[in-house]
Length: 239
Image (cartoon, rainbow, N blue to C red; front, side, top):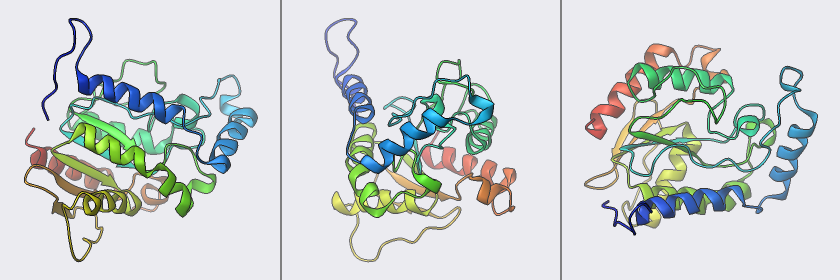
């Protein structure tokens, strides 16, 4: 997708739309249960972060709308992105993801600590099915539906060459969007680690197990497996 230039020094139409999208995500108040949970976590805090000021509201997308790869996670972690205000930053899932991204040349550093550090994504961006931290990491069906417009707009604005879905819920959200756009018809492609699917002539979908502790502690997802996914993602995105 090509961007049209605005007045000198004002960026592009798409960049401004991306910024406004993130502002609207942060201002979203659709899910009372999730908002209350985020605020309560930010009030009570975890002992290790008792001096931190928690973000405690919807977390925006991370990265540029011009990235070739769009990574779709599930939701902010209660003491990760809900604390730091940046996707996958400050928890164990993020440690795994950013290490793998760095090894693949898709992030400038292997560690993420805060939204103000100098870690930058390279040719990839990160979004989520839900932008608020849900209790027990399990958003309800209606909460996923309430957040659907954000992921739809994110995909529409970024038009990546590859969408990397971390987990089945992320995969299903991309498939739902694809059916709505009439890219797909008939039987829905099923999720699988390393499974890929052609959505359009220019956009592919790749699935991976989510780097959650449930998967990494049990060995269901290993660092080698995640590295292989990143190699596959770069190849499919032609970068």
